[in-house]
Every structure is written in C-alpha cells, then in structure tokens.
Image (cartoon, rainbow, N blue to C red; front, side, top):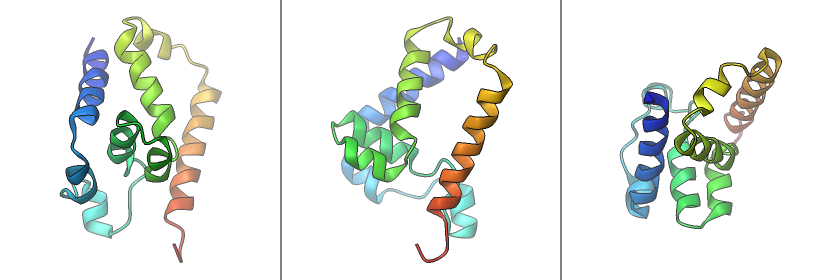
Length: 113
C-alpha cells in the first residue's frame, strides 16, 4: 500500500512540476552536492517531468532509465498486487537490472563528459 501511494505521488509530482523548476530548481541530491557528480538516480525527476509533458527524447536524455522506471511506477500505482509480485522476481533479474543501472551511471559520469 505504501509503495503504491509513493509511486502515485511521484507520478503526480512529475506531472505537476513546471519546466522552469525541473531545469533550474535547487539540487536536492546530497551525493551531487558533495561530489559535483550525479548519483545513479540523478535525472529521474527531470526525465519523468519531461515524459509527463510529452517530451520523450528529453526524458531519455535526462536519464536513460526514466521511461522504464516511469512505466514501472504507473504499474505499481495502478495495480495493488504489483508490489507483492515484485517480491517473487527472480534474483538474477534483480542483479541484471542493478548491473545495468550501475553501468548506465558509470557511463554518465565517465571522465571527459
């Protein structure tokens, strides 16, 4: 129930967030404030906001997993049993997803970028 409400709240927040605040708002990520580099989830808010306003390309540019995570949040928010189903996901899928997420993050923070 809590996961479902959190997903719904995040989706509503992304839809209501104005462009100027998404692009020029304060940096809320502690990792980024300390290191100056984005964390693995930096850009998801901007990605969801862009996708929610119909700018899919901007959403992909902000975070490569933005569209996928937004679809997952929609699924979680709309299906009460989705969180229970996530508990039975095979561990290998979770490990592969984590490796892909970290790989994408390392690509985004590579030197010279």
